[in-house]
Structures are given as structure tokens and as C-alpha cells.
Amino acid sequence: MNLLSTDIKNKVLDKVIELLDARRSEIIEANQKDLDDFNKEDRAMYDRLVVNDKKVDGMIQAVKEVRNQDDPVGKVISEINKDDGLKIVNKTAPFGTIMIIYESRPDVTVEAAVLAFKANNKILLKGGKEAINSNEVLVDVWHQALKENDITTDYVKLLKLQRAETQEFLKNPTEQIDLIVPRGGERLIQFVKENASCPVLVSGRGNNFIYVDHSANWEQAIKVILNAKTNKISACNALDKILLDKRLPDLDKKLLHLQKALHEFEVELLVDKQVKEILSDEAEIENEDTWYEEFLALKACVALVGDEVEAIEKINKYSGGHSSAIMTTDLSKAETFMEQVDSGAVYHNASTRFTDGGAMGVGAELAISTDKLHHRGPLGLEQLVTNKYYVYGQGHVRV
Image (cartoon, rainbow, N blue to C red; front, side):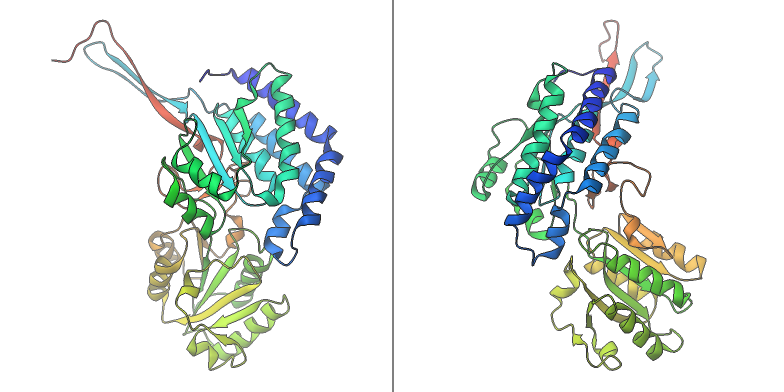
């Protein structure tokens, strides 16, 4: 793959910005076709599918942010000059070809492509059939921008494959693929992991926890819980499980307060045996599988734990490794929690909704990685490169 100059890449991105605005009505009209064909009962998926003026503005802003970031390719990571004259330089380098498989979310079509392209990668976009009209127009925007700068449209490809065709492509790809990123629910992730013949970087599964310590500021805890649970239920950083310290003062009153606050937002509650003794009208958690589940809905589990040690154990057993939070006024306890919880992002007295490229200062993101190799958390521009060693000699041989 040829390395494009930063200037050329930025010219393409300037054109993408211009075209997204110029073809705004066309993009929204195409999206309306997708919305008209979609089953609105799946509220989370429907919310992700919507493209309006605000969403187009967000796409434009994402491209602008990436355009203005430093080129991540060719940066020197380390340089060693050995005594024998051998020079060893480690530099950042493109992955090559990245495939992203995602459901709904037409804005991912733009964000994934801009990140991959600025990092000099080709990207294969396998969006869901529910967003096909939106994605076709958005990819055409990319192709127009690439053509007008005499760059091959191979840098951005939309794959229109059915499930069986996708499965075959993953097992026997017709072109070199260096990394696959499945961005969606547990079923999609498992499907990709079972069938892919190249490295897979898992993204998107949330199942996030908040633990409320007995020393927590209760009003603050309620505020954070409501934000994490109800601000955007379709996001992978939304809250699913609430663990309360048994030692909370006036525990019964606090549980009733929590119940009322969540019910005002129409949140369905599932509770453990101990909580059910107080919130008798709520359904009890009867299946352990529920603890592993990411809801993406107005639903939450509420349970009691003895202390932060039990909370950490429960989180590490059941969570998706995405985001976990502790509400406490004890700084030492918060530090221990944050060190020992095995999540990509850990919070003290803050909502899990901040696990996002923009909110964390990364900018546009390809996904939120819950893997540990090669990166964890928001996958921004700097994370879409690998490395390469450049070794300079003068006839050096090893003895």
C-alpha cells in the first residue's frame, strides 16, 4: 500500500466535509427510507439509525477533528544507535486493511472511514441491512471525494453481504484483511470471533456497573445513576447493574428513593432476593445469565453487596470489561476499586457515559475496545496504527 502524504489526505477530508454539507438533504432522505422500513419496537436500534441535521453536523465535526489531528503514520517511537554503527528506528505504520462490522449507526460509516483513511488504512464497511440506503449515499460521498483528488476508491468499500456471505467472507476473505472490529451486541461479536480467520478486536459490549459505597453522597449517586442509565440507552457506555452497599444508612429509604427515581424514567427493575424484601413489587433476578446481559433498554438490575471487595468480585465476574464506577467519599477505597476492577474505563463519582472518544479527548473513535491487545478503550486515530522497525546498516552481519 502506498503511503499518502498528509497534505493529500487532508485535501480528501476537506472535500468530504464539503460534500457532507452539500449532500445533507440527500443523506437525510436516504435515511428516512431506512427508518420507514425499520421496526420501531427496537428502540435502541432505531435511535442509532436516525440521521438528522444534528447527526450530519456530528459527522462533519468528526471529520474536521480528525483532519486537524497530527498524522499518526511515520512517527518515531524509539531510536537506537548501537556501538557498531547499526541504527534501529521504530516507527508507526498503517495496519493495512481494516474491516468493521456494525449494526445501524450510519455515523459510524463516516467516523470509521475518516479514522482509517487518515491513518493510511483501507476500510471495509459491513453495515447492517437496516441502514443500507444511508450507507450507500455516505460511501458515495467518500468515493466522490477520493476521485476528485485522484485517489482510488478502494480506500473505502461498502460490503453488501447477507449473513451467510459474511460468514464465508470472514472464513475465506477475497482480499487481505489485517484487523476486524465487530461493533455491536454479544451475538454479533460471537459470530465474528467464531468465523474470522484474522485478528479480531472486540468492541461495543457494555454491561456496565456502578457500586454505591456506604459513605457515598446519596444525592450525587442518584444523579450519576440516572444519567448513566437514562441519558442514552442505546450507547455501550450506558449503565446496566447497580450494586448498593448493605451498610448504607437508611438503606430501605434509599432503595425506595432509587426505585421512584428510576421509575420516573420508566426504567424496569430486576432485583436480588435481599432488595425484593424491600421493593416487593419488583421482579426478582432468577437467572444468572441476566448478570452477563447488556440490556440496551430502560432496564437495570439492583442488588446488595457486603462491601467493595464483593462488588469488585461481582463486577469482574459478570461485566463486559467496558466501564465501571464507584460512588464514595473515601478516596483510598476509590483508588483500590479503580485499580482492581478489570474494565477499560473506571470511574470515581462520575457517570459511565463519559467512555467515549470525544468525551475522553481522543476525538472521533472507530469503536470502544474491551480487548487488551493492542489497545483498550476508545480507538481513536493514534490507535489505528501498528509499528515497524527500520534498521540501517553498512554491511552489518551478525556473528
